[in-house]
Image (tube, rainbow, N blue to C red; front, side, top):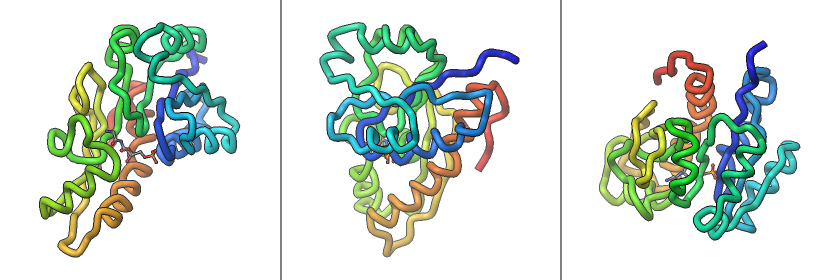
Length: 197
Ligand code: GAR
């Protein structure tokens, strides 16, 4: 059997995507969620990781930007792909250089709309509602040195109704994330066709 693909998930907050990805791959022998890395001490994703039986490692901002600690750790685990699942720091250069085209992010909007610094999580859905958008969606993309840029791998859309609140939009987005993010990761890391919506 060929080498098992090792994933590291990076997350900053709640961790629903980290959990969904971990559960999806739990019974798939070709891909292993090796570790969940988080950068906020009180991030609920750490509790989720514990419940899932997946190791969680905390690294602070200083470790990411001023040291090679994260890179050294990822290398020690023989990580193949880094998955950003609600990770809010800009990925440092040393990681970008070590994982060319191997860092994947999900963004809760149809990029290039509603991307960039400060556009994350609920802020995005509030802006979508404030601008009376008729549709929104998710974008899964390769990460480069900018926020929310890099080659798009996949987009899925959903309708925004006139009466929808930001919470309503968030619920629709979470459904799309659950349905597609693990499957798109699987396709990319196993070099298979990326699913379509
Ligand atoms: C997700 O909706 C993800 O798309 C978004 O943060 C949320 C994290 O939720 N990511 C960004 O906004 C990145 N710019 P989770 O912690 O429950 O997975």
